[in-house]
Image (cartoon, rainbow, N blue to C red):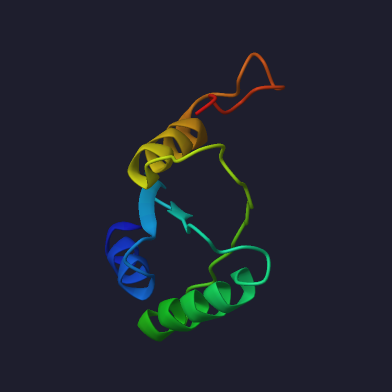
Length: 100
């Protein structure tokens, strides 16, 4: 499950980063100020940490780079993203994420 892994991931990231649990197999991390250039390093570090815990782990990553308008509280944004990830498919596919 993700509970022990979530704590490990959280400990491997910066204080400003947030990690949320979507389900038993999926974590979502919000990494403010990490753009395209920073993601390969974050991915490599997390892969090393996770495989160090269990060599059988084969994490997969999906990156979404976004710039919200204005100042958004990271905990609020993480709650919205986790909510969207666990919600059934939207009836309006043009707008799956609420405006912040």
